[in-house]
Length: 363
Image (cartoon, rainbow, N blue to C red; front, side, top):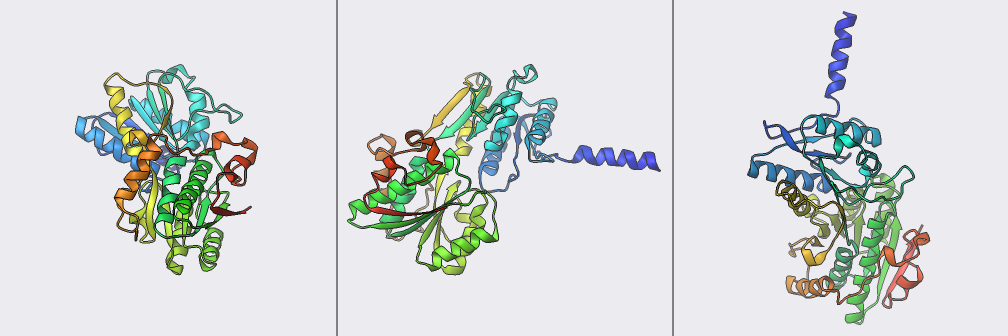
């Protein structure tokens, strides 16, 4: 009996971390999820949709793997699992894979696999970014561009009491926030208005009662719309907006289907990027390195549905999008300020351009 129980335990442990597949062929294309899962309405889901669509259209096997533990060891274990199952392309969505990729890209056993990294580049043991190897494509984005567009659209639509709630003050989140402030400012300036913005980093990408309470307080205090910029914190902000009959701007993917309170989303076109790089791998055109993706190539922007705006129309969007895309509008980003600011919007060279926006930065 003890031997039987031991065998069952081993078998059950082998199943932990397994994913799913819609194909019976050898899974050449693999996605490793983080804690969000393939239905997270964000990076995991967008990346999985790309993997699935490419696999089905081109007769390639595909599979996703969900780690048993969401840490470097757990991520490495599932990357190894994917390799052992025959993966030729492995997609890793989100910054939590940075340490694992920093180690594995130096391992000869992985040199023939093409890795597609979404929103991060490999890091060393000290957390410093390192150059990707030639088989590693690291997609990073100009988040300040869709952030700018979101702020601009909100003010043009008539909102003058705005909020920004970011998760952890990482460069990507900071860029969204800095762009948001500048877009709001430029719209306010064009309309001869002033705008007030409450600004806060929650310190987490997870939903919580505390975040909902803070968002509710902002809404009850007059804030009309909050840009939710931090993974699952959106669930807390959606709930607060629904209770107070206020609005939200989503992030990374189109979040309108998640809540009727979402008027638009500042998006990264993760699905397009993943499909493009899987195709490049099979076409022999894969290029490793860090790739900074932007509006001019259709890789960032607002969601294409403008039906929840009152006044802001697609023609208005097209006009400002063109200026952002061609560089006519200069946007201060994380890279332009002192890193010691750690996301503070009152840093000198950002504050100097906010002529029509007053920021209440809450630590």
